[in-house]
Structure formats: structure tokens, C-alpha cells
Amino acid sequence: MTIQVDVAVLGGGPGGYTAAIRAAQLGKSVAIVELDKLGGTCLHRGCIPSKSLLRSAEVYATLLEADKYGVSVTEGALSLDFNKVQDRKEKTVEQLHRGLKGLMKKYDIQIINGKGRIIGPSIFSPRSGSLAVELADGEMESVVSTNLIIATGSRPRHLPGLKPDGVHILSSDDALQLDKLPESMLIVGGGVIGVEWASMLQDFGVQVTLVEVGARLLPGEDAEVSAELTRLLRRRGVRVLTNVQLKTEELSINGDEVSITAETSEGNIMLTASKLLLSVGRQANIENIGLENTDIQTKNGVIYVNEFGQTTEPHIYAIGDVIGGVQLAHAASHEGVAAAEHIAGHKKESVDPNLIPRCIYSRPEVASYGLTEDGARTKGHDIKTGKIPFAAIGKALVLGEADGFVKVIADRKTNDIIGVHMIGPHATDLISEASLAGLLNATPWEVGQLIHPHPTLSEALGEAMLAIDGKSLAL
Image (cartoon, rainbow, N blue to C red; front, top):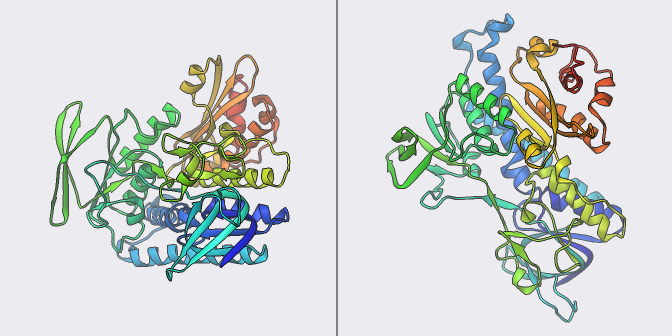
């Protein structure tokens, strides 16, 4: 059977289904080829399930500290039912999955469940870009399209000598399916995923050791934010080790215990835990999708594209994790919209990666956009900064979450905002105002003139903007 559409999308994650919806809105006939479930990693093995677990962990941790709010919770009355935690996660995912399938029906987008592979020119299409799809029953189906969007996402990266087995050594995918909490967890990798899991598991009562090969956690974030998060995680009981090299050849699994030797600046130490979680980044899914049948170029394990998402075959686009860059769901969605509009002939400005907000859902949360202080200096900016601690903000004290700060970086000559960095309560919600300021090319003074309601956490951003020029009223 052959299906003919204007736009075929290979991959049904956030980038893929967003591109499909936008293309359909623009009058294109669309089909999505998805190997697993519509929604991709984000909905089923990433953003949504992990944040559901983080929310349960946050509630549990808050109840354990209820007495500081004047609320008494007797020890015998407070317990954690991890099965219910997992059940809530699954229900949240399923509700969103149903809604997503409803959107596909609304826009008359065909969903083809199977393994898609790009094929070369055929009698149906004089150029590469058609898809051969192997269905679950072994039957084959062809999808011929005028344009193709590759949105196959990424998968957890592994380390040589540390291959996940789903029992003792876990990937982040494996960890989401735990049926019970381990007594202890050794987390390898202090990036976004590692930090979120460390925060979550510690709140659930698991003994956590977090190791990072680099000099600090969250190496892509501002150094001050990294230092503050490290301090707060350690205060909560997480053992944080940086500048660590694991000797994977000395990995040992004995019963319910995993041990590995780590080289540190103070000599070798033995790290032992019930389970080991690998969180060392992700790699693009570009294998076995038929790229060899095209003239598409790849570089450093990702697909090369121009500012509109076009590959070196102009009728084939690629978006999301497969093109590298900012590997976040909302970045993929934005790239998907840009690709769909470019296909439809709409003039669309390219995606500015500096305006894409980065969010980390640990406790406390971390959010940022733009350049870090070190990054700005490296690029030659003469900078000025403003920083306001949440301890100076009334709403943060009311919430009982006064750790962290908001930091704004501006160019001294142009007065442009070139970076905003937050660590503290609801930082992932607060970053949107800062990103809007960047999109509108606002100056710190202009954002500071906005009347921020009192008492709210948003006052921290307004005061940090004013602090750049010494005009903050909070300090």
C-alpha cells in the first residue's frame, strides 16, 4: 500500500507532532511515522513522567518539613506508597497521550505505527525522501511525500564498560520503571538528568551519591548557579563528587550491590550503592533510518541543517535532538513549527538558540537563557551584572523557599540583556518573562519599570534588572 501526502514526518515526539500540526494548519496533508507511541521520549520516557515523579517527591519532602509551617504530621501517619507514585505518573502520561491522539484526529493527520526508513528515488518519487515502513505485523507500507521532516529524537548515551542491564545499571528510561525505591543510588553524570534524579531520589529518602567527571555540576550553566545548587544538594544530604574518573574495568556487582573504583584528587575511593544510574547525556537517533540513501550530511553524530532546518537535500528537513544544539522538547517544537512554515512558503525567522530557555526541575529549580558570565566574557562582552537573592523577596519567605537568586547579565556598552540565570522556587516558570525581554530586545531598565505585583516571586527578576544599575529597592 502506498500513502501519498504533502509532508511526511519521521518521528512522533514533540518536534514531530508539532511540525505535523502546523503543516496541517497550513493546508498540507500530513502523515507521521512513529515506531513506538505518539509523544515520543518526552511524553513517555522523559519530560512528563520524570516531572510527575519529581512532583510526588516534592510533596513528600514538604510534608516531612510541615512542622516549620505550623502543621503537625505525626510520623506514623506519613508514609510513601511508591506504587501509587508510579500509578499517578502513568495516569498523567496516558491523559496527555489521549489528548495528543485527539489532536491528530482534529487535524486529519495520519498516524502510521512502524519502523520507517528513507529510501532512494522510485517510480513514485524521482528523488529520495520517501519512506518504507515496516509495520508490527511484518507488512510493508510506503509513504511518498513532497517534503520529509526527520524528527527521530535521541536515546540515553552509554559509557564504555557501563552498559545498562535494567537491573543493577540503569539508564534514565530504566529508572522511570522502578517498581520500588532502592536504598541507595550512585548517579554517574552531573548534568541536567543526573541533578534532577539526585534531587528526586534524595527527597524520596534514597541515599544518593552524584559523581561528575568535570569540575562542577551543570557545566553548561552559570558557575554561580552551579555552586549554589551543589551547596544546597549537599545540605540536603546528597554526596556530590566532582573531578571523578570511574575505573569501569573495576566494576563489581555482588547480589544487590554495585561497586566501582573512582579516581579523585585525593586518591582512589570505592563507591558502592544498590544501583547505578547512568546520566551522561543523549545521542541522536540517526542510525538505521536510511540516511545512506540520501545526500544528507552528518557531523559529529548529528544531521547538518541550515537555519530553517533544511538538510543538504532541500526537500528534507530535520529538527530536534537529531540536529544537536539545544536538546530540549520546546526547542524541538519551535524548530518543527519553523520547518513546517518554511515548507509552506512562509517567511520565518530562524531559531535563535540564545533565546531558548533552559529548565532544570530539581529542588530548587534552575532556569536560564542566553550567555553565562564566563561565556559572555569569552565572546568579548564588557558586562555588568545584577543579582538579587530570593531571601530578599517576601513571597519566597512566605513559601519557606528562600534559597537561590536571580542574576541578570547585560552588555555595558549596548545595555542589551545577554543572559538571565535563576536558581530558586518556581524558576522554570519565572524564566519566560526574561525570555520575552530577550525576544523584544528590552533593556534591564525597561524590564525594571514593569510593575511586578507584590508579593510575588516575579519581583526577584524586576529587582535584579534594576540592580544592574544600582537601583534595586530590595537590597
